[in-house]
Every structure is written in C-alpha cells, then in structure tokens.
Image 1 (cartoon, rainbow, N blue to C red):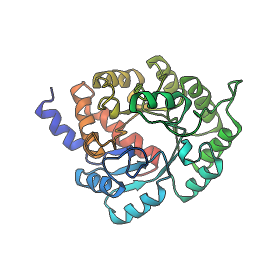
Image 2 (cartoon, rainbow, N blue to C red):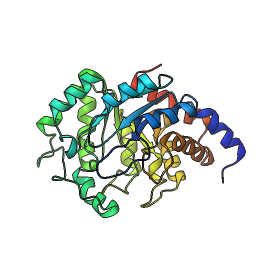
Image 3 (cartoon, rainbow, N blue to C red):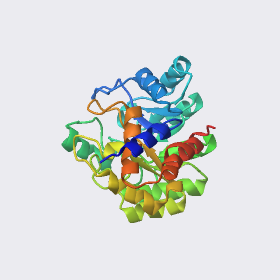
Image 4 (tube, rainbow, N blue to C red):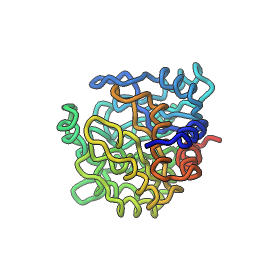
Length: 295
C-alpha cells in the first residue's frame, strides 16, 4: 500500500522526468486516450521535461514539431515504428523520418511475427499483412535491416527492438552494437501480454552486459489483459542494474490514465517496491536524457 512519503517523493521525482514511450491518437484500430497536443499539455502540468510520441501506423515527427511550438515548456520528440501499416522494414522511410528529426526508430511491434497472433488473441486485432521477421532462415539479419542499422548509426538516434522474438533480439542487438550504435533499447521487457515469447531475466541481463539499455514499461502492470506485479519489474531492475535501465509508461490506452499521470504512478509503484529514489531518478531522468541527447 502506498504511503504518504512515497506519494510525496513521486510528486518530486516526476518533475523533470522523461517518458520515451507514449501512444497517441488518432490510430485506425484503437481509440487512444490523448492526442499529441493533449498529452504534451498534461506533461507540462505535471512538470515532465520531455516526451516521445509513438504511433504504430505513422511517424510522429511532424506532430511533435507542431506541438513543440504550442507547448514550448517541455521537449516533444517524434519517432517511427516499422509496422506493416507504416510501410514495414523500409530503409527509405527510416531515412526520411530520421532526416525530419525522429529520435527513436522502433523495429516492428504489433505486426511482428512474435506479436501478430498474440495481439489477435488478446486484443481482437486482426492486423494487415504477414507477421514480420527481421532475420532470414539462416538466422542472419535481412539486408534491409542491415541498411536500417547503418542509417540509425549515422544519425546517432535510438534503436528500439519492438516486439521481435528473443531469437531475433540476440541477432539484432549484438550486430547493432558491433556497428557502433550506442543507443539500443530492448523494449518493454517482461511484457508477454502482446508477445508470444519474451526474454527471461537471465537473457535481459546478458543484453545489458553487452551494452543495451533495458526498458521497463508500466503498461506491463496496468492493462486489461494480464497485470504483472510492479515488484516483478523492480526485482528485474535490481538484477540488471539501473545504469542500464529506463522507465516508461507505454500508455495511451483509453482504459488507462494519461501517460504523464501513469509515469507518476509508476514512480510511486517502484518506491513502494523498494527502489531507491536515486535509482528512479537515473531511470526516468538521467538515462533517457542521455539517449535523447538533451540537457
């Protein structure tokens, strides 16, 4: 049960926090809680420093630029997710979005082969196209993925692993790091509500030791499919080491509060689970600021 001291601490820690994973309206198959302007205004009210807008179906850079002008008190960044609806594994699209200012490039999410069937079963979403994979039958990265990694490296932006399988992750991450990509984020670990196979804690620790960052998202604990106890995420963070971790919400669902409020609740939940304030500050402020290259 949350105590008053943790509630007060969360109110302090949310000031200057950064959420790198917020889903926004509109989207063709789901009604999202807030659009880009609404979420930015909520973030400003709570004192966040920066947010990253995400949509599976289109890049969010143009929206981020417009909203940034309207809500200058916080930093608003765009991203691009390579799901089928957005054009899939398309180096040309990745290059265009990077040149326009995308700060995060995500590998396929709900239309990844590791996710597409689970999304249909758990959320009733029959998404278009074949399930996406990023490796061939020999276990090598597809040529277009190699080209995308080159573009990400040259631009020094964040690479998110999306909903790909553990097998694909252990091909992608070492190759990305070998190429010199410094900002690889293994996305919303321990979140099996939307993926057939997820990484174990031992595998997560191996990836962190390679040099990847590990993302823990509060949707894992607050969703309408299957809730994971916050203490499970807290224990994993402790095993991995917070210098390699970030905290995000992955919110935007109509049944959840606005994402900035969700981040404050996530902070409270981690405090209740025994995570020290200084460690939370590292995961919601220092590490995301480094990844996004902001002061």
